[in-house]
Length: 508
Image 1: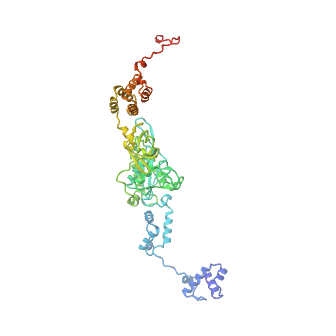
Image 2: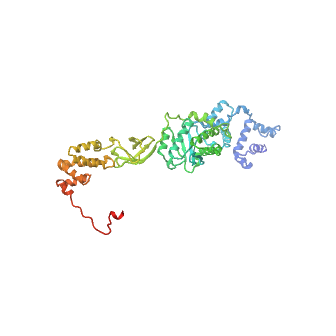
Image 3: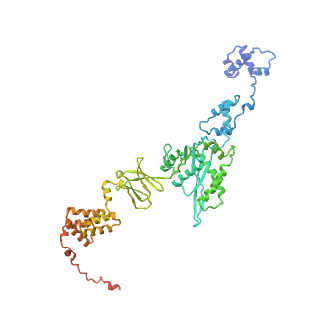
């Protein structure tokens, strides 16, 4: 108050400006203007009346503002604000406007936000992150494994633990699988969706091989089977950045909670099957999801029921069928090799690269996004599955030939020709491998006569020359016109006499 009086004296008695008073008293010019404005408003003049002491002057210039009763400023509970902010489109400004409609004399926006942020700083970092209800599902494998003992052999298997955690409620799912292969990875996702009774908008996996084939900060390459599963459920995949655990802090926390409250209590139990282990995990999960938070008056299950479950996308009518995707190149025989079996595709795709989709029962071939072939899946190695419509016209006509038809045609030429073709078909591992040779022999009748072909076949049978090239050589060289006895009664060379040739009697 002494400084205020000095400001009034310098201003009214000395006539100094606000700048000069500020330089003299080391006070800001804005403060001096504020003092003079208040004096003008209350109607004081200089010199002050004797009855105005410092306390009266302070009361006149700075009257006390009547306090608003705490009941009229009562804010909603911080837990309520925290849960509402997880809902899509809800902001602090919207919550403040709703609060002011109910409490017109309540806190202003800045104080409203300040009080909430001060409370939120005391929460755990994982809970403090903003996640919208039904938006993200974080998935990963736990580092800890569980042992399963084979009751027959005593062999110990290390079961892998899959963990999925919802972003807004921390509601957690876990199950054991025999491995971390692609089939187990996708099947665990399907089981998680069934557990949550819905699907989130975004899946956030780590950069494991079954999810991301090539890591990239901006455009990672996703596994085709994993991407197909997400598209089937209406979700998108956004992998966490490499070496950025905060991107998947929810599942890191979920894994920690599963290891502490699900796996650790089971450490003394012995399991003899995967189903037995998963049954025990389900019971421990129920305890974990119903366990109250330390700093929130809620549980994972209660938050899930009120926040996330109503906004999750519905499950598809039919369960997703796992399909494995591979690439293959069409061979010159218009077949592709898949798991050592050969499947036909349209012959126009020879030398082209195609995509193959494999399920447990079917095999589909895609070329530039269009399905070009479909077969029942076969697990017989080295065998062929061929559709006639995939063959060229000439090959389709070739299929019309059968062993009986070929032998019947050969019988119209003569018995020796018929006998030769029978030998050709019998001496091949599969009759179809002798079709070309038989057709070649039969067509020699067009170049030579039926009589000459019959004679050539008789000579070939005599010398056990069961092939098209031998019959053609006989006809080409005219050997069919020579007597068969001359060629068959050629004198044999006598056995050599030598001391090292001891004969069969030596070994008796």
